[in-house]
Length: 95
Image (cartoon, rainbow, N blue to C red; front, side, top):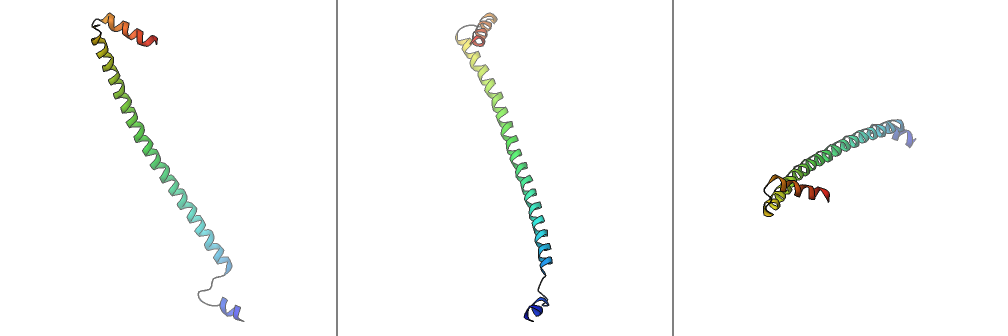
């Protein structure tokens, strides 16, 4: 008799209703995790894009710097003619 009165209480829920609530909450958790995963991937891609852009800019500046260093070497060796520049370029390309 105590079981029957307990099941008839206003706050009591039946087992199928509890299973239904669990399934709904599980689906909501999965959807939230998928949204969170997408957001984390998007943030990671943004960080990679920023780092790649900065790395590309740094590479361009490094090439300009290398060009100026080679130009300084050419002037320091006294090879101001086009032939001297060609010879030094050929020597660098050969190694």
